[in-house]
Length: 276
Image (cartoon, rainbow, N blue to C red):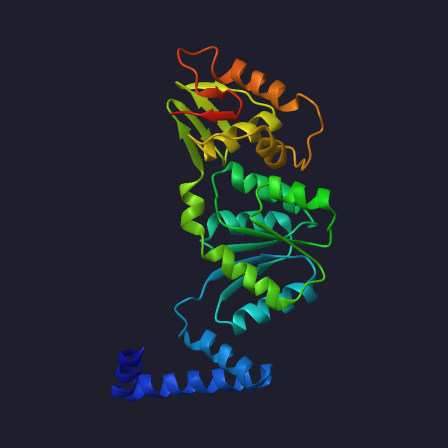
């Protein structure tokens, strides 16, 4: 940045243009208000001094909300694009390169969950923060299962939204590394939700998929019946049923029996594990 400033002042024409640009940025940031810190953040955005600046997409049909979000994020130094309906949001998300997508659930033209599922089905792994007034537990589960990385309920504090966006941006590499799980000749694609073994497609029901994913993520480690109940069925007590055993049996019938070797192992008196 210092080299750039030095260069523009060597040229009187570039120097004048740069001075005019800075003066205009200062005036805009003065008008934006927000105290000393707000003006500093605003200038950081205009002068692009923040190395942590991100490119963000906000898909929100409520103009008041989208303006509030965009202004706050721009004051923090980020580049923000805003669209007001689901179809335009899908086009923008698939054609642009974004660090994080902030997505409203109830959108005109194309709802947020459908947009999100379409993105994930196309292999787009951009971190998504789902922003919605639908705050019931079932709604949050639906959003996360559709492919959202985080879920924030309206009304919200901007500080929390900003912190969640920053947290999502810190882990894009980990997300990329975990889109495919493997054990031997078994492969699970978490984006397309496709499971294959030895090149053959395996059709799994949603709960079977979740059970297999849990075991694959902990490959080589024994998972007790209680662990599986809590992780896959969200049951924190023993319901005295054989639901785990039943689903393990169904999973083996699809994943192991048609093939030469067994991947799902029973550890007597302990639980289950997948071996490579």
